[in-house]
Length: 71
Image (tube, rainbow, N blue to C red; front, side, top):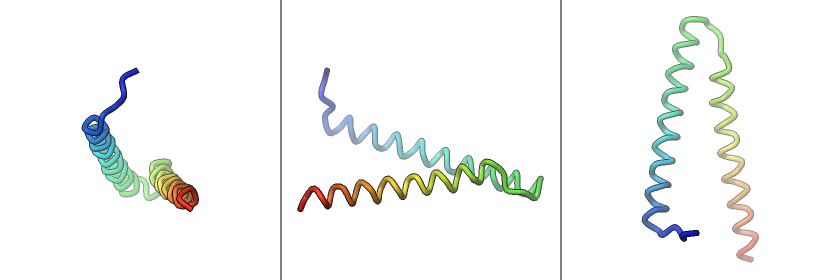
């Protein structure tokens, strides 16, 4: 198996971030559209909130784990 070099890792990271931003922008627009037409917050709103919580949780856990390993 070929080891991924730093340039390929950077390209992958940028592509993943761009795709994530696209999804978030799309879901926010969809959520606003649904709220304007129905007056209710739907599953899209739940998805946006929970994905944010998952992101923050994983980042916090990994930072905690890495800081613990350095000591």
